[in-house]
Length: 296
Image 1 (cartoon, rainbow, N blue to C red):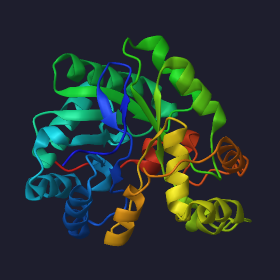
Image 2 (spheres, rainbow, N blue to C red):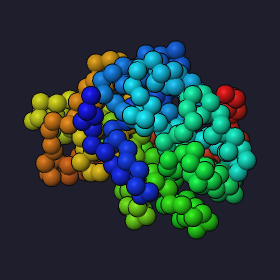
Image 3 (cartoon, rainbow, N blue to C red):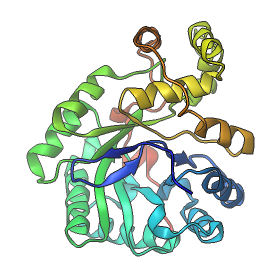
Image 4 (cartoon, rainbow, N blue to C red):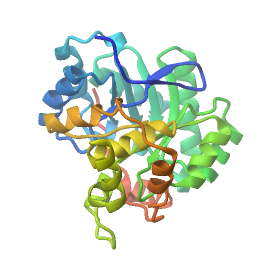
């Protein structure tokens, strides 16, 4: 089938489907069936991570799906426990082995490690080497704030292709969006429909029940989730929705047949609360978040 999803061109010329399928918190025993379904629906970009514990199942889903390997953009992440030059080179071997592939399309550092930024730098230099060796097609980072980007760029030579961060209508991170744009880094949204807010105590309702988003959804005959995904795509971001429910997997993919107006985009932007759902990047340390990533 012809993939209808628009592509984004990374700063090294590699193209990537703008809409990806995510498997964060998807149990390994559910990952194969859910990822096969996503590929059947039409997704051609799958985002996983060493720390998710389901890379092996993503690889199995790719094989079972019958979709040619070259047609699927595979993205995964190095966990902080494997930072350091040699450790990160080995982490690639672990991820590639579990995925059952020779080449990873996008390999990113999962978090900055502010208390050991030397290890973060060494890990990124290993990514640069993997890129030079042709083992990965693009490299990037995740959850990097502007100061982390500045420190990284000062000590390395390849500008990250992607910075995957928490972005949804209740948490836009405009300072990070601006820093990414300034450096030619594509912003990729995790929790793009604000799922992280559903599990947190807060003063606001979930994004799926937000009156502004629901009004826009009604105007277009779409769901709140579809409106939020369209918001990302129209603003030039990559979005990685996740679900294991077949009808939601399909619903999240069905966002290409309508367009939000400028006023609607602005109204959604205005919902930003400035409240982060995920961990503060400054709080991520080996002591609090370190965990061993198993061998392939």
